[in-house]
Length: 144
Image (cartoon, rainbow, N blue to C red; front, side, top):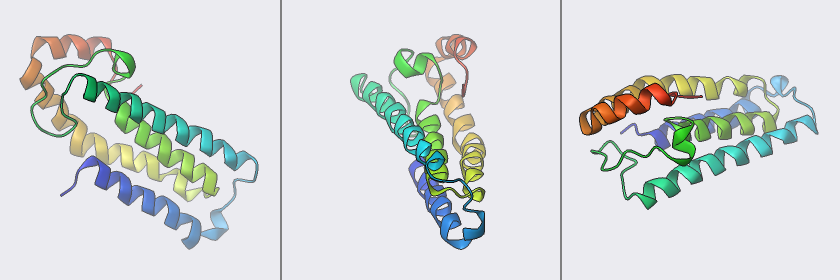
């Protein structure tokens, strides 16, 4: 079953494989590639903040009916902080590995995530919260 963590894991594997399969594209030099650590860490922090808020309000991170519309913290800046966190982790690892091809995988991940999950999640949120969700959508961007 395709769920966001599975899709993320697949793209993480592809990102790492690019390093080994296409060594001629490992072009980002040391120490510039080390900036990827900071970017990946920022992604982990963003995902952690989102998870804390889900736990605080005891609502779901799955495709079940949500019980609370979180509009504070990272959710006041983006409607999809966990997916942005995953994107940052992927791009950070790609930079760390120094492989130019692996810099495309985060964008492919985000594109697939948008069409496979985000649009469905938005429909579910509208069904659960109606006008409250529409008001939230007008104030907070989907991505950034």
